[in-house]
Amino acid sequence: MKNKKLIYILLPLTIVIWGMIIYRIFFSTIGEEENMPFSKQNAKKTSVAQKDTFELLLNYPDPFLKNEKRGIINNRDINQQSAPAAKKITEPKPTKEVETINWPALKYEGLVKHIKEGHELAIVNINGSSKLMKVGETVENIKLIKACSDSITVCCNKQNKTIKKN
Image 1 (cartoon, rainbow, N blue to C red):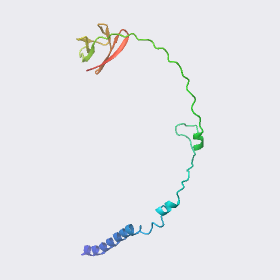
Image 2 (image 1 turned 180 degrees about the horizontal axis):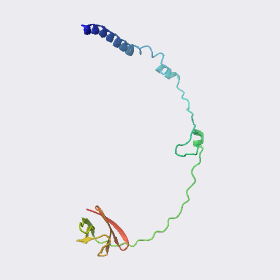
Image 3 (image 1 turned 90 degrees about the vertical axis):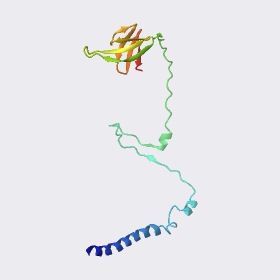
């Protein structure tokens, strides 16, 4: 019984509130076109655009330069700044010609870890024959400098070369 009385009171109240909201949405925009400052009628009257001028007041401290202050800059100062000075042209230094080396056909095939002795052996294919090499070892004038799981660094006649695993 209590719920029926509450429904009879709240239902008309809800309808009245929603009715007011709908009325304000639909009927409040009618008639305001005449009073709007940017209507089509007012836009035709003002056809001359004015140039916008501004000044930047940058007299606050720069957060990146701790103890320095910026000067006041405005748009006139920006246009009057001079062009940067021309760079001095220097002649390039002659480079030493590097002696070209005919490298043998090298392939890095993998890395083997020797459990008992605790060192690593790289499997390097030199001119078609596979060799096991330790770091620092020289085979057929090729010295193994560094061995990683994905690449090796070798030296031949004082020139280094990195070879990646296929």
